[in-house]
View 1 (cartoon, rainbow, N blue to C red):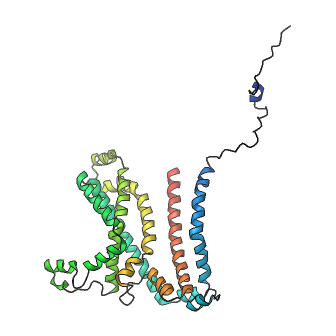
View 2 (tube, rainbow, N blue to C red):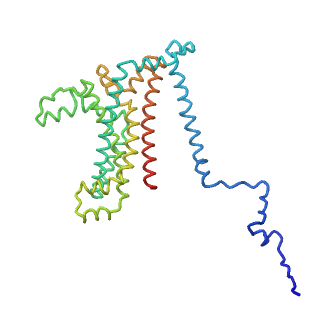
View 3 (cartoon, rainbow, N blue to C red):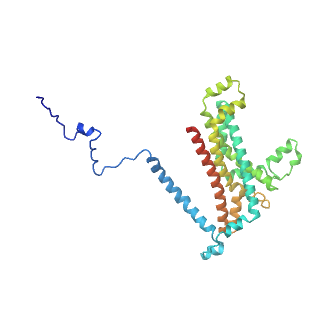
Length: 332
């Protein structure tokens, strides 16, 4: 006869039988909080920023949409009368030849400025990578100082540089033998005025692109360049095979941000010539200001603003599509 020995289980301890698959799980004490899972935590951290964005941007956008369907001139603004006109503001804006002329001018201006900014930024970043430590530090400090200059101050400096009578550019060209530039007006036409404004914007935007691309170049191991040199690759081949894959995502991001910034440029255009001469340098932000604030046609200006926002939403959707494709390519 075999004796059965009973095991003594301490109070509060889990018995061996409860650890079996079929055993009942211990009851969670009342009042104990459920731990947040790793999938839920990022959304909870993002929630305050989302609420702030919706509060700061969402409600004004809703208001702008409502105003775009109203006739809100100075009279309606003073009397507080609501006059709904439906899509008349959109029809008037889209049927105005001046609107399309300014829109094409803005798109071309943005494309040229963004292209020049990216090209100059990449060249400066590549230059910094091949410079010595002392010279590179001087270049970086110079870029930071150029980036830190306020917009109005930089615009004033450029106005003095390109001044018809006292501009240093005309005097320098005259001393170099180009005497035809004595008294030459760089702001006499819309195209030349936009060229000066574009040069100003590029000068202010290159530091951001240069530092961003340079940071991407620093992430490329030096062994990759050494291997390309051992394989007999030229400088151009090394750039496309080694540097370009590293900076391409960065350039995509900076191009997207540059399009958003340069498409909405107002201060430089307005400070240089207020959209002149004869409206030749007027872009959509200036046109929006002239319609809304200066002309007191807030309903029509809101319709133009909505068209501009839809255009930028298309650009944003394209950027998001490129991001999704790049992530899918990395996972595949």
